[in-house]
Image (cartoon, rainbow, N blue to C red):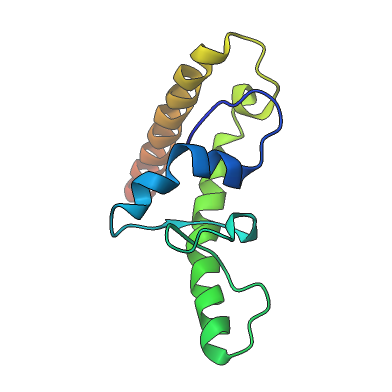
Length: 119
């Protein structure tokens, strides 16, 4: 997660500026959607038009992983501070983002404890 970035900047542009060079030096790769195509040494993206069963299977596996990540993003956006325009100082947005991440983790823990008590 990098940001906030003032104005509209495409995700791949931010990735190139912030972390692709770092990833290229490691054996790790990031997962991205079709908007991240063009950096295969650092970002795994789905096949745009899969032509083989293997490519379909790869796309399905990527979809399963990415959908779990997207669910967490959606959960974070339940916090109004992350789904509306930020009106504070840009430098302080990261603190609000981290606070929402902590609250989300606490929310999951409470839910898990509740499920365990119901067993």
